[in-house]
Image 1 (cartoon, rainbow, N blue to C red):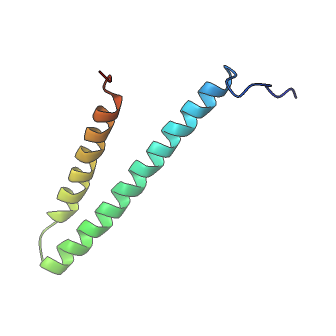
Image 2 (image 1 turned 135 degrees about the vertical axis):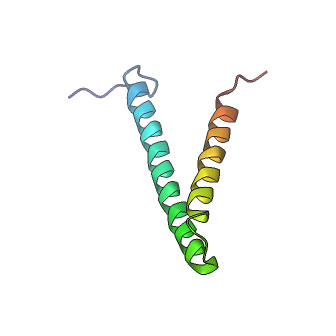
Image 3 (image 1 turned 90 degrees about the horizontal axis):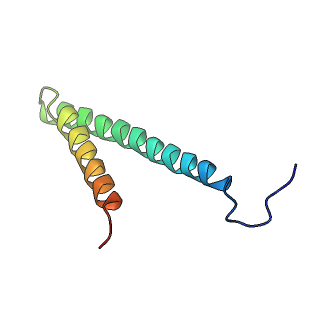
Length: 76
């Protein structure tokens, strides 16, 4: 198997892109599981009826969407 001689070889880009999106997906799933767990614990502690279990993951999703939009905007 021949290894590319330069680090900027065109075949490296799809692998890097896939790894970047796989990392983002892993962080998203882990963050949702953690916020859902914390929401369930807060609901049990404060005797709410699944309010925090909906609110915490929703805030997490909104913050991730905000970060993605902010990071993908064109720089001036």
